[in-house]
Image (cartoon, rainbow, N blue to C red; front, side, top):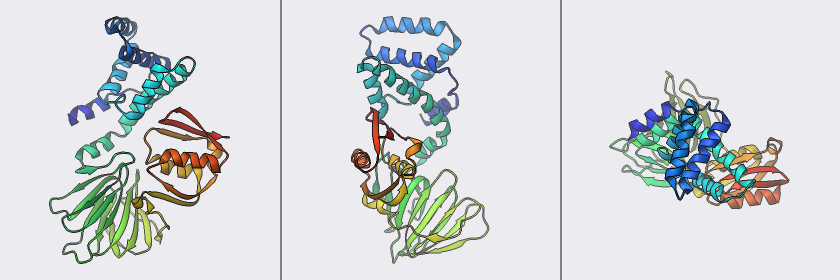
Length: 327
């Protein structure tokens, strides 16, 4: 099953004409809603026979909505439902949105193929908005943030972060200190240490809250000892100068985002980590400062609070597709 998914995503095209993709979406939505599907299938066959691009677009839309389960995904399913029940011209607007999902999803599955493989390979992973707390055999406590995947060896002495973010607390009197691995490097925790590790696209951020940890980038010959209150970003080749741990940056383990004068664009990007669907921000609003404590499990309420505090308004295509615009 995994091999089939990997193979399928390698053959995805993303260069179809938008009107062709839109028509293919029309067909698949019509087929789902049809009382006489045989007639719709005949119309689809005629449309596909008219052009090789029509046929390929139909096959891809069918693949993305079926094999990859786009219509089974809550935000995509809701958008499809809105498309089927809305009346013109809003139906046309929603249809364009759903077409965009199918187009961008093809790109996303290509670019995220390694991410999907990481989830398949993981022992434990969390979905969008999900957090999970574990206690390992050696007494270490691990909290997984949203969209995180990890692997554990048999003895639970080595934990590999494949993607996402973890908070790790090692046992003070542990017999064997735990090691962390990421695509960017290796981290050895001292007993009684507490730290957070977050994997970005091409680097990691390590913040040590208690104790100390030794960092060795994957392709470096030297290492760095990081003590409580210190943080760094590192790649496979090097680490950046040590800085002070940011206050409240680990508030997510208590289900909160705590910010002080964070630019709105950065805050929305952070909020998006915990919210399924699409959340967009008008560039003119990017610099507005945001301060406060916000629950990550109630993103709708957070957006309402932002709308009350700042000169912004929400445009909701669906529950899962929101754009923030100037009021």
